[in-house]
Length: 208
Image (cartoon, rainbow, N blue to C red):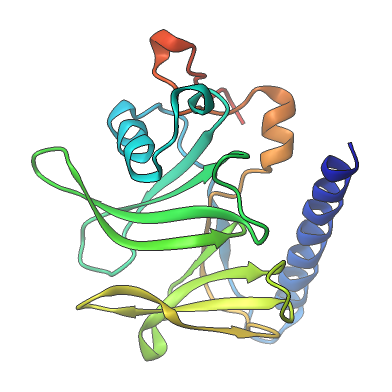
C-alpha cells in the first residue's frame, strides 16, 4: 500500500542518515565507538502482560502488536533497566511508537521510570552524561523540524521528556545503539515477538 511504501522509504532514509552520521564520526579526529545492539530474542510473558495492561490493548490486537526490549543500565546505578518499544497499528502514533523505561522489582512487578509517547529507533545510549542526559533518538513526524531528541535524566524523576530538546546534529560520542532492529525487515521475516500469550499464537523471536 501507499502507506507501507511511505514507511519503508522513511526507514530507508533514517538508515541512510544514521549511516552518514556515523561515517562522518569515523572521519572525525576523535573517533566515536558506537555498538549496535539488537532487541533481546527471549519472550518475556510477564513483560508482555504488563504492556497489555498498561496500554489497554484489546484481545484482538495483541497478536498484531509486537514488542522489542533491551536490558541496559541507563542511570549508572549498577542495575539494568528495561527499555521497551511497542509496535503495532493500535498503539502507533504519527511520530513513532510508544516506549517505556521500566525497573523490574524484586517481586517481579514493573515500575515505570519514564514513558515516551512516540520514538524512532534505534535509541542511542551515550556514555557521556553531561548535564544529566544520555538518551538520544531521531525525531521526525511531529510537524516541527526534524532532528535528534536529547532526553535529560533526573535522579528524582526519570528521563524528563517534557524537558527534552531537539537539535540539528549530535557530536560524535561513544555509546550503544539499542533496539537496532529494522522493524519492516523483521515483519517480513517473521522475526519478532507479539504480546499475545503463546497459547493464543504469540510469536517467538527468531535469529537476526
